Amino acid sequence: MDRSALSQTITHSSMLAAMDVALVAARRGIRGANPLVGAAVLDADGTLVTGHHRGAGTPHAEADAMSAARAAGIDLTRATVFVTLEPCSHHGRTGPCADLLVDAGVPHVVIAVADPNPAAAGGAARLRAAGTTVTTGVREAEARAVNARWLRAVGERRPYVTLKIAQSLDGRIAAADGTSQWITSPASRARVHALRARVDAVLVGTGTAHADDPRLTARPTPEAVQSPDAGERSAAGTGSQAGAGPEAGADSEAGAGSAPASPLPFTQPVPVAWGMRDLAPGSHLARDPRTVHLRTRDPHEALETLHAQGIQHVLVEGGAHVAGALIRSDLVDELEVHIAPVLLGDGLPGLADLGVTTLSEAVRWLPDDTTGDALLTEACVPSAPSSDADIHSAPSSDADAHSAGTATSPPASQDARNPDTLLRFIPDTRHSHPTAHTKDS
Image 1 (cartoon, rainbow, N blue to C red):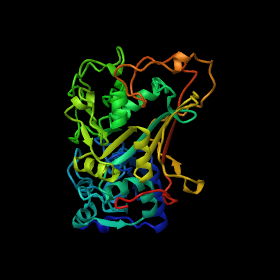
Image 2: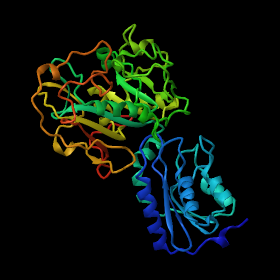
Image 3: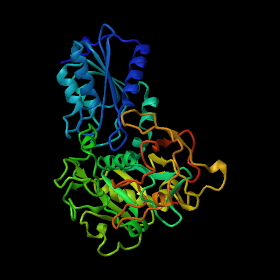
Image 4: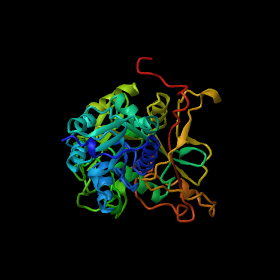
């Protein structure tokens, strides 16, 4: 059936305005393995409703907007649907959005940018084959900007990379004597566990693996597990169920009384060690059969190896040289910095070997303006002086010492008076990366 006769006549300015609204809706999502996608449904009488994608396993933006349209009494057979990314054509955890639009009788679909993912592309062709009018390229540049780094990761056939740094006000991830538990607050550590629970893999360098003997498991709060984006990876087949790794349910890294004995309803991230050194025999990562050991010095090769194993989103937690290598190669798509209101002076810096020798070579970032992820935005305020024991507490026997990793009892200085600041950034694509090294360099 040719539905074009049912579509409403829309001016170009109206198309631009409706797509602008869809782009605003897209920014309510969460960055990661899935792109930010927004949709808007425009009724013939000018009524406009929106929807957006909240993470894998949740309704796609088109379905979300169509549901809102039906609730508003909009007749979809006479409406126009605007979407910031080409509707998918594949069967994943949800059905193809292109089929959903066809089945609903939508006569006209306006698309900002084509989907570069070969597994999902083809939605526009499917719609045209069903007789739907399809308009493409509306606000394409703006839509590309929203997902610039996701589009790049897909094009480079590598995972989306989130780098997390937990540091003091003066940029230290450990004190001069190497102690770091805990620089950041319990809220920051809970946040990191929630983030671990929705990525495919957690990566550290072999130096951090030797120093800290981490497990790299996720132990989010029940509230985080039940959030819309929690289980983002649950059907991806890249991890194992919580509790399936060695000594599951008895993770001393979690702290006394912090984790339930029964498995949690989410998929554990794959632990990844990157570096040429062998893992210590008997270490947690060496004993975990899921551990991926990337024996290469090339960050491009490391990420391509992970991509080949189905890993689409990796969280990098340290150390300083690993973080520096990825930033230097322009491979970090999202930067999350937890800043604790403490000063450590001499100590271990969070980044090393950036290759920046002068201000013109600075690697520049922009604040991430997406709103789908809860932020810790409390300002740092001075608190009562803490004892040396509060800051230089001895590491436990099982620690992610240089990460905001686990939920042990915090020092007395880390309380409600002393909140961390969470800053989230994306690369500033307006400036070329001054120190980036290509794979062949």
